[in-house]
Image 1 (tube, rainbow over the protein chains, first blue to last red):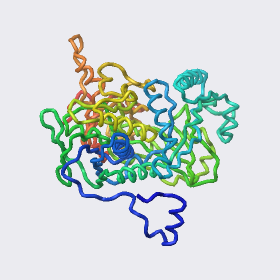
Image 2 (image 1 turned 45 degrees about the vertical axis):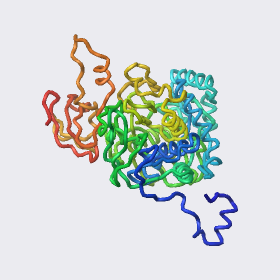
Image 3 (image 1 turned 90 degrees about the vertical axis):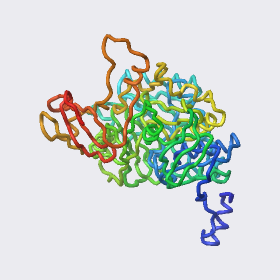
Amino acid sequence: MQKYSLFSLIKNAFSNHQNWEVAWKDPTPKSEYDVVIIGGGGHGLATAYYLAKEHNIRNVAIIEKGWIGGGNVGRNTTIIRSNFMYDANARFNEFGMDLWRNLSQELNFNVMFSPRGIINLAHSDAQMNAYARRGNSMRLNGIDAKLLDRDDIKKLIPMADFTDEVRFPIFGGLMQPSAGTARHDAVAWGYARQADDMGVDIIQHCEVTGFDVVNGKIKGIRTSRGDIKAKKVGLCVAGSTNILAEKLNMTLPIETHVLQACVSEPVKPLLDGVVTFGAGHFYISQSDKGEMVMGGDLDGYNSYAQRGNLPTIQHVLTGGLALFPFLSRLKILRTWGGIMDMSMDGSPIIDKTHIEGLYLNCGWCYGGFKSTPVSGWTFAHTIAQDQVHELNSELRLNRFSTGHLLDEKGLGTKTWIG
Amino acid sequence: MLYIKCPYCGLRAQKEFSYGGDATVKRPNINEEVTSEDWDNFVYMRKSPRGKHVELWQHIAGCRQWIKVQRDTATHEIFQTAKVTEEIR
């Protein structure tokens, strides 16, 4: 594989950049693989990459209905963080932070990981107490956390509304300085390129239509491009999880909902980190291009449409204007939606299933992107070793029936409330 | 914006309504032995189909009644609405 570097860039400039190798091939599916990963999103690509790299399993195919980078990996708001209170989520995502820090070097692809910090704003004394508790929990798990008071926040985001008339005055906030953002497309492309180089077949425009299960054991899958035998199959399909589960006669603690985001026209740098509005459904960061990247909450009803409705955008931006009045001067450039696999406790599932050789990776809710590397890493381990890793030992499917929920937000099963 | 025909008030905008989830989920009978599997199915397990979905909505900024809506989860088209005591087929 051609190494990307300053020298290769200069060398290719002489041939007008016409002679770059393709980043990944377009193979026809073979009749049999050791492992088939369904879903060529960030998590699927990362899983295939770590299967090849960490477990030397290279006879692997990724089956993708659309194209690489066309799903949630290209639709998220690129936030990376590990500011979780529960041990299982904190340990899992902090391991992921370590993978992020080295990802550009490891993939020889600039994923533009930028640890610019995230601030969760607090608007009451009770919220400050809750954040102090969460911050202490994070620090006990080795994650950096800083409790900020109103003056600290004023220094960091002076353009927020600090006047006396506001409905939700800023009391302070919790900051994770090591959190940040990355270029989401680059993450997909970087993993795809390396996985392809190690022998993984990335098969795009190929829809899974059924499964061959014999005596409780997976034998293969049926696709729009023919049957493929497989010793092991991993499901990594986010919002389409329920559709495939139905073909397997499985019912899961997952509902699919649409989540929207939007960006403004690009402006000069004014916000260097990520800020979440603790009183409404709104968060914001500024991309390297200068666009204000904003998101909020689910549209609030089951949906498989990769687009939402305007009332939710209006609701989100109303919260945005309350926090940052300057936003009223900006035009919205575009809005879009992605479909989320909302688990019933808000935490993901990476586990084996009752079908031998079938593995499940789903339930990412609002935060799949940040976990892309660690999800792939632990899912690859689960598939290769046929057992969960310590890191995903609490992210199991049976936690709902045993009552060991990871309800980080404490919202119960009403996933649409947010 | 979705427009939902409330069986009591007529066609109203979605923002008058609050979503209540899958209407086909049945609570286990009261005062009977409930297995943990039944309880699990009631509380957590959802089919979440792509296509026709019968769901509960509450007309919270109107008559405050709970209603049933049959809606396509891929196109958002609404086919039928009914009182909560009525069946949708």
